[in-house]
Amino acid sequence: MLYEQIASNKRRTGYVMFGFGLLVLALGAALGDVFWSNWVSGTIIAAVVAGVYMAIMISQSTNVVMSMNHAKEITSVDQAPQLWHMIEDMALVGKVPMPRVFIIDDPSPNAFATGNDPAHAAVAVTTGIMDRLDREELEGVIGHEISHVRNYDIRLQTIALALSSAIGLLVSFANNWFWWGGSRRRSDDRDSGGNIIGLVISILLIILAPLAASIAQMALSRNREYLADASSVALTRNPQGLISALRKIDDSQPMRAADPNSSALYIGDPFKNKKKMGDLFATHPPIADRIARLEKM
Image (cartoon, rainbow, N blue to C red):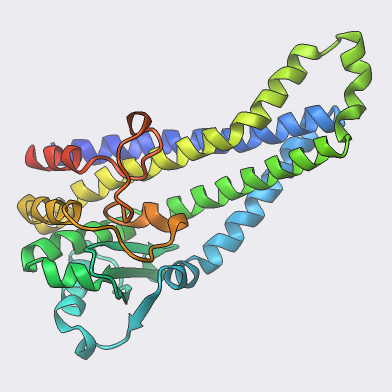
């Protein structure tokens, strides 16, 4: 059951990332079609913009994310012995290098991992999670975060964020171009009716692309949480620890100063947003669903 769930979640993540990439290229093609009557040029421009965004995000993600969430690094075991040894032990079990360790001064229990790969990973926990969770519960949470590192989840989330940012830039460019009358290059086609259907489809794609990107990013985040839960059980061999930890995280107040742009990285929603639109835009799967899956393992 455990390894079947892990394999299933990995396949679903691949589908989402493939669709995300297609969305970026389709948006570029739509821009090229509307403004230059050349979808190939638009596709190339979109691919270049997405590549630049990914390079920037991947090279600077750890320090930027930690700074945005007011996390402070601890550099020796003496500063937080139990946390340090637990992360060290889970990294050893997961066969990944010891990640950098950060602490966020916040009474709400939560944690997240970031980094481009296991060799450049970091794990951050709140003071609240250290105070409220016992050893087995905290071990389940750390196993969850080490699983994110081990499974390269954070790189996927970083790429998804970069692609979303690239889509936002391209749509902003389109809006400005429309405002200044750049789409008039297609006036002859519109007047003759030669490609009116294609033009309408392109414009609709430009309008709806940001919404589709948000849905894809949220779906990716929810899927990777399920995978990290399952992988944590594989490391700790103790689903009850993580189950109990998730209940305590769910039964807590929102964090005081979490960064909204990185909220999907946390093990639990730091803002405690309620369900809306069937969880279509939720950054995390419902805690009850996660617990139900864990109880079947």
